[in-house]
Image (cartoon, rainbow, N blue to C red; front, side):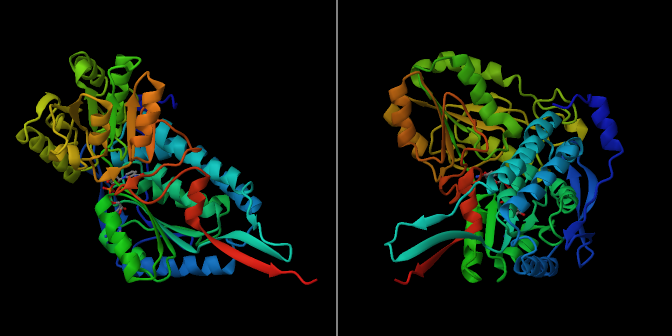
Length: 499
Ligand code: NAD
């Protein structure tokens, strides 16, 4: 953890020079049109910097550069051990800029500085290192053919990879894509969210300093429907990796069909159930984990446990513990290291959250915590943890992704009913189970249609574990060696042997 004080972070922020340019072919540059858009600090509503508004022309230039670098072999032709060393240097340079990156993330996106520093940037550095270290330890295969032939199964980089990422964990989600894509030898174009482009822009220079050849890693800030769409419709982008909403993910599948059938790997939305059984080992610990599991990062987390399923027989005991645990999560200045909850990313997102809070009340939920915007005098977009009890799983706040600090509490009476409610969702990203009964834990974990199931914890995991969803939560996995599959094509080479 950084030991900078609130005042020191504020001082650093005041003297920070922020770059809002695109990074194309090894140079920071304005958009071809010269247009920009405002990047806002959600903690006070003020403009931080004007950012290059890349569009189709910029995408075309970057794609042409990426294609040329890929075909030249300048990176794709390097050995895994060579790429490993460069990526390790990249991770070391990220670590040298740990504080500056954390500061940019907090100013840009509104999350508490302790989290930007300790989770987002730390996680991104770890991710780059992890894939760097892994890549020269992954072997190809020889098929079990007859004695008169040899069947080689080898993996090759795909080509130009476009990574389109969201704003809730900008550098972390970015690293989950660009690190495995780069170590496998691809040329990568990173398109950060228009709501949080600053860390992506910053790290481009570090990639180059580390020795990633010019044009192999480029960053195009801009809007999804402009530069994002241009990347997704390109005939020369061979692989599109995406983290974001289910709606945009579906559109990307269509763009692929309309263009070159590029591989499209999606990490999308969620509405994850967190199930508290009456035989849970420690109700207080479960209540604390349920609060953080829903409200961490202002509730702007794809796996947030937004549907809290509580067995009716313990509900009266559990709910006060939950409300008490939630008190530790209160909005404050994101630059204060003691702040546990920051600002919602922008006014659009905040209004969406407030609208869903109205819907929760209209549809008969009992509001037991939060419920309205706070700290308006700051000019920032702050909404405290909001809990609705007595929610039916069919209600809108239990079915639709809000992507903010709103929890729907739903009662149940049996394991079967809990599983039925949990699985009654278009999403299948994650789920939590709290029980002391091992048999029940296994049975319920098997029955849940979710990509990650946490037993007696919520949102645990590290780089060794795949991360992704069932159903409309996506079709891919980030993290772990499994992620490498997305960035490689399998080639079969069959060699006939002469007698
Ligand atoms: P979003 O779908 O609005 O945007 C994601 C990215 O897609 C942004 O960079 C955006 O500019 C781009 N985009 C938007 N329209 C596009 C288009 N027509 N063509 C190409 N690109 C386009 O999502 P968001 O609001 O930035 O992020 C929140 C969403 O991300 C939530 O649904 C959340 O659940 C999801 N998410 C999922 C995971 C996961 O691993 N499953 C992780 C984090 C966030």
